[in-house]
Length: 213
Image (cartoon, rainbow, N blue to C red; front, side, top):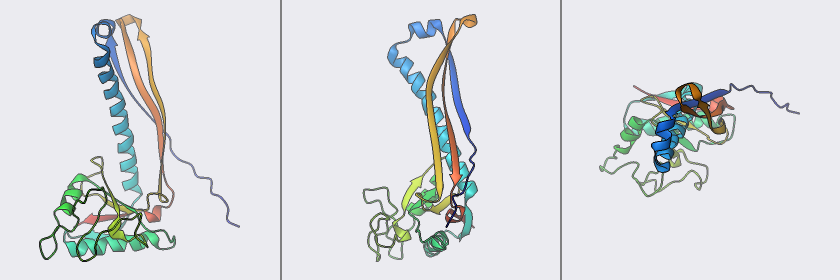
């Protein structure tokens, strides 16, 4: 009988605030006031995404080095896919990349100067040359060429991570929302938006990164 592990995760509190004078509040239209509060919430969301991106990259183990060529990218993807599935019987379904890597992959062409990963109306990383089209959610065997691609500017440059997004890495968030308090000494009001986030590398061996030469 297998025992259930008791795992601990680090909880992080994220909060941002803005203080407005009573005059600014009274003289600002409701619509403009909402824009200020939306910006506060937007900054919170960017911060939570940054934590997820940093921790996912930190949990990744190298599966090789990509030299920038099409041939070596295919090898690197399959090498990483093998590393993900070894001992788990789960195949990768997602490739996470920084914008610069996304741009590199988008410009790759085959021997006939055709895009290796053309845009075909979905967010998937889908090859349409001799291999035909692919989608990780429908292809039998979850072929690595059908990986869903996630591009995030919060990743460090040259980031490429291949993993099974359902099994390997977990992200938890509890949004506490907007609170406000009067500041009589300055005739103002302070608005704050906060929440709690945590991440957990459930199966670290399934989180594989491909570095660049």
